[in-house]
Image (cartoon, rainbow, N blue to C red):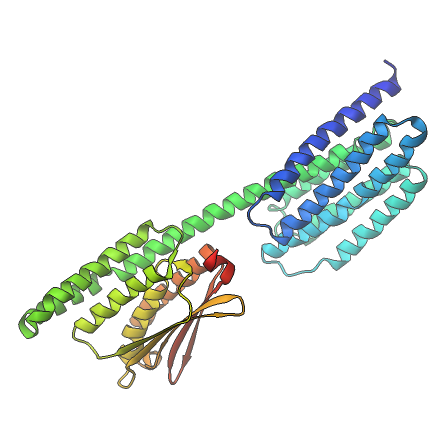
Length: 406
């Protein structure tokens, strides 16, 4: 076997392996449940690489007089992997919280891609084409080093870039060896595994944060001080209203049971179940000697799901720190509706608790609302806002309809 035949075998084997790896990666990426813009650009990049590989393997099998045409088309596809990869990196940084658009880098990558196409149109596998590809990924490397929020976090990208740069150097140094597609495939494969690792790590962090917040909220709700006060009030009922004692004990035990059951709810629960929990607290608050109040419900929709323990703490705050701290307020409204693609839940009171509550009470209320916000964001991409005014307090929960009803 002479040198030309050996190089042909190396090129063919590298291209076939690359097609197999790129195809598997594309299938896995397409089947991912959550398709962000970031993974969308990755799919475009892997499709570009696959397009180039397909033309390259065709060129290897074609007669010498026509193989050059297929090789030209291969490099047209290869040329645009770097610009798309640059956009993928920009989306990665944007997801991490860095606010920049990257128009300059995208434009520079695109200009170099056009230059590769022009050079390849005249001499498909020339020294100049490899030099331009090397320039492309050198610019990508500079972008990674200058624009990354954390060099350490982007080290995986930097290592991945070394693959196409190395294959370009080999192409320049050893005429006849053309494994550019292999270098691009290894880059994308390496980056995809990093993406999967990042996703798994983020998921673990979110699960840990979710678990910690749920336990914190439950401990805050089943607080010894609250249990002591509730039992003391029930004891007073034995002398003042003996007929209400049984009802109060049943309501109190139901409240504790619902809180403990919430520990096992890892995901979303029907809205009706969450309202059962809220209703038990309302019943308990009305039985124990405190302040008379009314609860109005306006439910336009009920066939949706929410995280456990998001409505009940807001109702509790409205009773304890809204009307409970006011000499005038005595009404609470719980409302649900569909608005602009979101399921909206409102808990409104007409009290003035913000003016009179103590600092310890503010801290207690803040723990509950912060936990609600965190779990809404993690479990269903929801959000909560608190609006305070002289006429009372309004807590508004918004959950994307696709999440609430999906």
